[in-house]
Length: 129
View 1: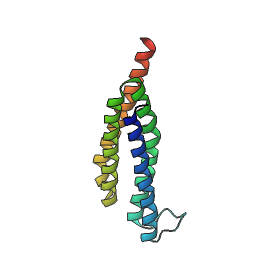
View 2: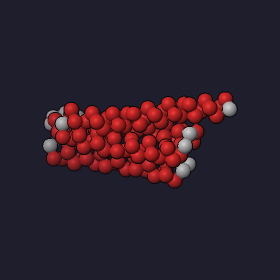
View 3: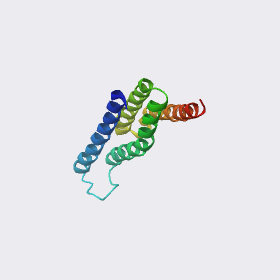
């Protein structure tokens, strides 16, 4: 695996780690003890950012690796960096208001889709040729 793709992988996991820490910080700030999941809208938005990012990681990491293996590690790195920017924008926007998450969601979703379709095409290409 390319060192740059590995770097994107570590940065994605680091982002998730920071988002998880934010959930803990907001639990304390708004007095929402575990296992409680509701009670304050600001806390709930922070929790949704963390949960949605976890859901997205399940798709993102395998397609990042597959795209980098079958298509291009450089373009995989670029698309992975765009995904990271999208997830940061998603978190930043959602922390402020639910409707402000859309731009980041679109950026990261398009990046994931390109990685997914590119992986599929790359695998088919290698299999046929």
